[in-house]
Length: 584
Image (cartoon, rainbow, N blue to C red; front, top):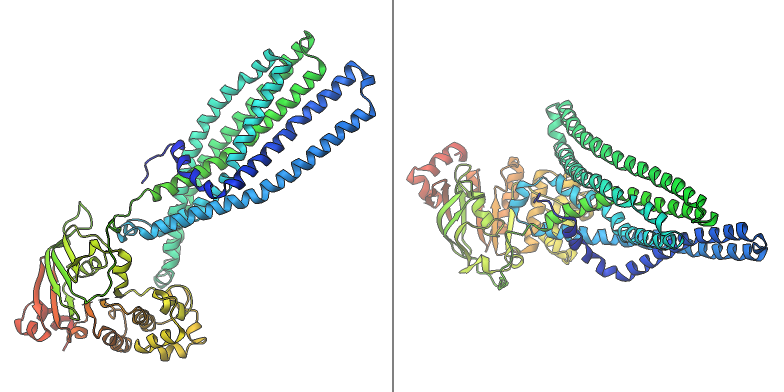
């Protein structure tokens, strides 16, 4: 992901985003051309007046002066209108383009598997989605303008000045290639510096997010000073790289000012010698000074734009780094939707490892879950219980073997249709920032108020929701912080009742609850599981005594299998676990 990309390749990836706005781009460039022409004509007007004043003062009439003044006034009006368009519509186009890129980036992230997010900090991704693309707005707008304006100024200035004195013009423009070489060197170093600063700010964002999300733990352990020290270290690392970047930028700008001075010295000294030798007249000399000023002004604009350009290119590069990550789990070209589901789940010689370097979590697993059957998975931590469940909706891709639903390999099914048929209730419930109604209707936004309320009744959540300040419109807070653990869990169950999936996965859904909340949630889960193929992971073994089958899963595979009573009679691993944790 960190592979360096050439500017040419980055621009080729970026340019297609202009396609939607090609009319705006063309008119924006037309306006940029008009403003440049208006600027280039002023020295010619001054040259004309100066020539008349020095060669034939009688030619400098009031009529001529007014004509020149009106001409320049018209040019300034045109320049003002063109600048307004560039500053308003042009900037808005840049913002829209940035919005399109952000949409594409977020959509691409939605396609990436759990494995990617296991390895990537959310704060870093947030930085790439937001701040990395902020500078693209200015870059997208100004890049075409600055290229056109600079090109017109340099070419037109060369043609006009060469028409006055080719030798003097060649002397002046001989300095330009040297400037390009020196400034390109600093440009390259600036780009590397800005890329590193983006990486550091992503790490800083991630650290801030981690500390603030865990603020309750921080305060409960009185570790505020430790968090401040950690933040201070990250903040100073960011300061160090920014300091380095600004020193490079200062060298860049200092070099430009040095070349400004060299250009002026060349024009003043060489121009004066040419004037003394009669090779140019006073009017040409004044025009040379004005055009060099215009030329240097455009170079200064390039200098000012250089930082913006480097920031924009860095943002584009980091954008491309994520967009180039191919989703490891995606629909096959001939994938078909999963429609009517009976609920049979088959694991056929399934092997799974999280990475090539790591060992197998599951090895040659064979298992068949009959339609409507309720099975429970128990066993020591690390035995692969959650992993097994994550393979059914293809949150992770199996390493070998096959997982089938109703005899169909899940890799031949579309991901959307597969996951719509599977409901998951996890221990760590996630509620989105919004209302109770929005969270219940998350899987079916088109659901009516009656359907939402019925789902809540089935989940045993309607009564407590009705007592909330605004009922179903109550704001639940970030991650549902305004609700208790049991309330959040019942809302998540109501969400599944509304979704109505034929296959249900319960991943330690009650292990984090108190006894009363567990009793209420367990009743809701039993209601939800009726008539569905259900796989339950549980540490509290008293909650799974009613399961049709209980599987004891260890690192060696399925060690025991049977009903609650059968496994107790065997006196094996399950019986030991039940005596230790189950209780009675």
